[in-house]
Length: 459
Ligand code: ARG
Image 1 (cartoon, rainbow, N blue to C red):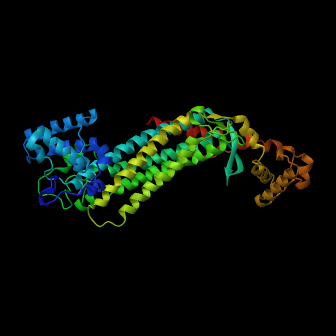
Image 2: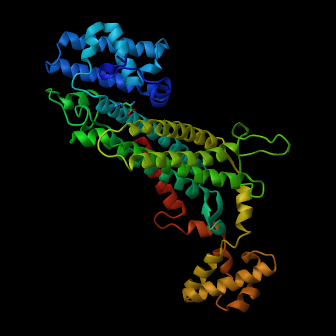
Image 3: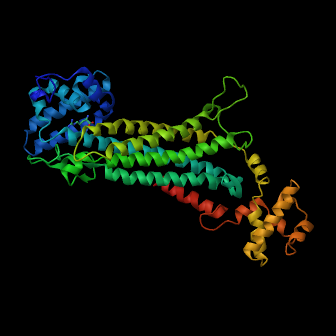
């Protein structure tokens, strides 16, 4: 007979190659805390429901506490032949408490057990991601607050478009992170629902009390359909999507930092602590952290697609394919945690060069829209104003000059309605401060955004 916990009907043991191929203990031992918490809640419920005696429940709970202590002290004897975290813990529990250990699995299957553990694990991770994303948003808000008066070229198509305040640019990322957190909040509410009581797939004959378990574990509710409960992993997919979108946001900022730190831009200097050198070119200071983070975004997307693909073809209910849900998730969890906290550090240590940003403003005709708007103010229809401004840009460009360097006579030759007051309109600071409408880059909407963000961060 096989000596596996499920070995009753087997004549022979599994081959070593199969054991190595099918085990999950090498990666699912990270679920130990959730597995033990779930088993304690299950044992307590079994005792309260009279399925086992209260004394037996107590013995199981104390045994599980001891298992946890062994795991945390590093003395726990993990065994690959016991396949996964669930059977390792149950088997050690039975060694510690004796025969009563074998009662723990009453009314439970590994199918609802693993799903409970994973739902707890995923929702615990989501909570940590939310904490880290909020901390990073706070750094964006603080750096925005410090740089309200700094202007730089805002781009579309990576071409100079209109002047914006650095605060507005940084706040854009704070809003993205806020939505990331809100997306994670919604996901966490759906993930933290207990499937325990679904048993293998069809529900159970024991008078279990699933709500009692869910309550003890701080979950928001219980499953409605036993087959759905053990079969779906949409909560993990959703969490992987949350991680992917958040990584995508970080990656876009990484891309900007990489450009901005190039001396041709010279908008920022990254701290030495967050840069690396070249082994051959002594002058180099490379933005490797930002590049690796941009690269790791690919992993996060890959992990989402791994699980999407795993899920698409499996019939109800539990299939062992589902064991493949853990590694991609664990990888994305690590990737996102490290990226969020490193980005906070990197942004904190970033030096902004307001002078270089200001210089760049005069090199991209970023005030061409201002000239058009100025003409609209003089009664010129916008399409016409756009054309006049374009001709002025062409003239300035042919002289290697900025718009504000053109003489009044030059302007008037193109359009006689242009007066001396055009120079005030062409001022970059004026362009920014005039954009005071809702959500714009002007000082008032920027101040309101900072207020709103601070309120959210304090809440
Ligand atoms: N290690 C398994 C997993 O991660 C646990 C559940 C096994 N269930 C089963 N019926 N073989 O999915």
